[in-house]
Amino acid sequence: MKILVLSRLYWPDTVSVAQHLGDLTFALAEAGHEVSVLTSRYAYEDPGISYPPHETQRGVAITRLRHPAVDKRSKLKRILDFMVFNGLILWRLLWMPRRRYDLLLGLTNPPLLSFIGVLMARIKGMKFCYWTMDLQPELAIQAGYLKQGSFSERGLTWMGNYIFRHSDLILTLDRFMAEHIVRRGGKRAHVAVLPPWPVVPERYTGSRLENPFRQEHGFGNRIVVMYSGNHAVVHPLDTLLEAALALRGDPRFLFVFIGGGVRKQDVTDFKARHQLDTILQLPYQPRERIHLSLGSADLQVVILGDGHTGFTHPNKIYGAMYLGKPILYIGPSPSHVTEMLAECPGNLSVTHGAPARLAEQLQAFAALAEADREAAGEGNRRYALEHFDPERLLAQHTALFGTPQPARAAAAAV
Image (cartoon, rainbow, N blue to C red; front, side):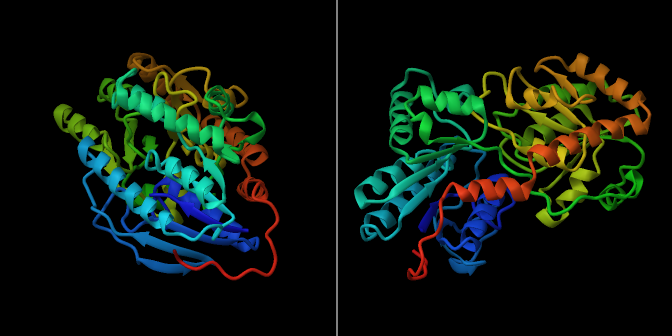
């Protein structure tokens, strides 16, 4: 099968979607499919980093488009970035010969990219697969970017429903998302629910205090509470920050924030305003070191905003559990996170707006013997090996695309 992938995010970018999409496309190419990718030339979090405009990696032909690289802390600039990138994709697809590809694969970043994809797939006689990492406009409404009932919201809802109705295959991440997609017009028979796989190359198995990342950054013997990933509006950090403030006088704790995003500055400002030396901020870590960075924590934080269940899917929980780390979940119930943690004792969970309760749970966790803390992580590890084995999940995703067709010309860069 000849497959064209449309996504703003792609390998070798460090954000989660880029890593998962890279894994999937490489696996599809290895399985015998002819895969091409249309993506951005610039790193998502740092537009100062650019990638080659054309290259082939592991059998995948990659074309990266040049467009204005903007500061995503500005809503207006983010919208401009989305519009320009979508326009470039539309222009490419308009001039593409009919049936050049058998299938277009579209994602959810930027918003409306897959509306262009499914529309052009119908015009050009191709099938369309939609990999839903989040749902719009519901997420934009919850984040305060859109007003419910506004002209923009109604337009985005109509376009989103169009994608769901006309996609030949919809890959989604949890049952909450799947049910919402069906309510919006997606055909249940076309929806496949598969969680993302842990994107960790290996597991650190040495002693806690000898972890190289822990030693490099001077964590010492403190209880490291780590949030690693996108600092997004839809994953509010306020409860965690307020708990760090409440525990400022307790030398046992260190709160480590790794990554970037629109709310990274909020963490910086909070730390400066309250003069908290118990908060440490670090940049995204390369994939080859992520097992060390995640493995250096005593608790991995997973956050889901109130009202966001089924609209977005924080997937950092998979890597953390796979590496055998205890989880601190801040968010609503039920969710895909609470369903997993219900089967894994020893993890922590609080709702948003309860920093005092969180501080109490953290103090109780710190009072446990190290063996008891490690036992919670090992329980998570066993659960992950049973349910989230990367090779098995990646094979299940690849199988959805069918058996490659033999003896076809190799896909070229678009």
